[in-house]
Image (cartoon, rainbow over all chains, first blue to last red; front, side, top):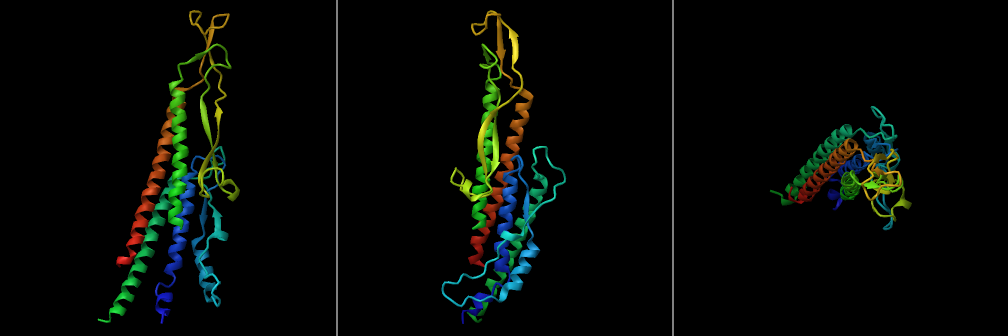
Length: 128
Length: 141
């Protein structure tokens, strides 16, 4: 019966989590724009989501099992800088800003999908 | 809680930039001071930034992985200005005083850099806050 809530959001539930993680990574880059030797990083979003989809068949069969969460941990990549500062910092602040803005828009897009799903479930429950 | 972490990360960066701005203000304020020897003369101070990349660094201040931390202040190595001013009570036996090594132009650039980086992080916080509010509104869909 509760199946409807498990599957209602589809991939978007995991995607939202990932998008938030990506924003965190970019915010770290912006925070360290003046730190000597800091290397800018990013998440290979497509790769992570592919892994999640492929591994999506894993089930929790015990109360203490932890459900699979999308995790960016092993899919962090170093960004290739346009030019490196003399102090070894590879953050291109304008690039990171653009990325952050785009990531925020993508987060909102995923949010919009989930809102649509919620509205759908609600409509079904009302049964009008 | 990734969106929540963004606030802490940006806050650590804003804090670091504020220290940088403060040290610039201090350098500017002391630009005209003199000392009786090259060692006594005021040296421009600069903070050293470090990224918090590892768990073991977290107990030393910031609680957010990926934030910024100030590991120390270093003196500018530029030479102090030697000036002949026998009337000055600070003057050495040959009548010389030693002015600070503060370069006003460098300090202005530092100040503008710090202000701009601070603004960048304010922008990050604003966007994160907006997204957080929108996520809370999801229940109204």
